[in-house]
Length: 414
Ligand SMILES: Cc1ncc(COP(=O)(O)O)c(C=O)c1O
Image (cartoon, rainbow, N blue to C red; front, side, top):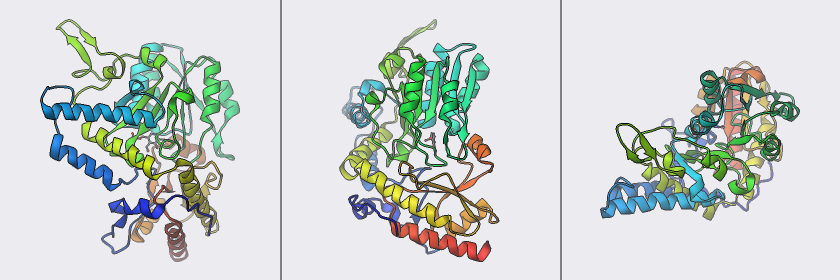
């Protein structure tokens, strides 16, 4: 058995997630290893959202009555709290519907206003589609040159030598913090230095980084950083884009309509400034309230360094045991110290979909598919993988049960 750092009070953490007590219809106890897709929520988050709907739900920023004031205060109080959690101030945080929408905001709220034909955007082969497709679309629309940094499929890292060349003359460099397929933590500090040396703006997709590492946005030196609340104990339907002051001053409206305007005439519109220019329509009030409680909860219950050691030791142990199972290939190196809790694997004769169902029959929830990272799958020479992803509430006992169940599946069907 691997060494799990017991400093993280996993039992107390688990007890606060009602869903983890669940028994599935087949009588098996749930073992949730699909955290890279979305994390589960502690009761405090669920209760805070329900309390909002029960007691002070009203549309924020629109009326003068008591409920509207309470709702507005909660929405803006949450921005203050969440932005501080990410090491920045509320003026640098734009609420979005998701991490995907945050990346689209970089494309359509910044790049569309600042880049034109021949300008260079750099991204990588390792990215989630959220950090590829917006760039392809913009490239078609604007004639922007799109360069991809390849993945070194032996080391399972970005090819940093190729990146040095790719960033030459670039205007924007967009890189994932942590790969959702491999759990590789990219050297974003190095990427930021490279981009800066070219005078390029830099966007980090931290959908998979923020749940595992304390973000200090102002110290990091990036211009944009995207986050999804639902992957870090918060609700679905909300994320944010953190933006440096300079980059924010270069942005223009993305989605337009109500809430983001100072004055509209039939001829023209005067927009709000700062983050208020980007939050169109009725705000995500319940979601912001839930997310605020999630960051409070994380701060009270989770030391991120201990959490990393906990998650990494479980994933590392799983990967090394799974490599011993006949026919199983584990992709990448979850055993590396800096790797982040993801074990992508395949069996050479049991189809990924079938393996997903067989694992589910034992109560184990894993993701199966291309993980919205088809270019990376292509570089790895596969169409899909099974992916077990670990977070703070998983235990070594769950990992042991998982490996035993996988061994039993393989000996029966392999
Ligand atoms: C690396 C990465 N980027 C972006 C996203 C998109 O996040 P969302 O679905 O919350 O928009 C994901 C989701 O899995 C992801 O793993």
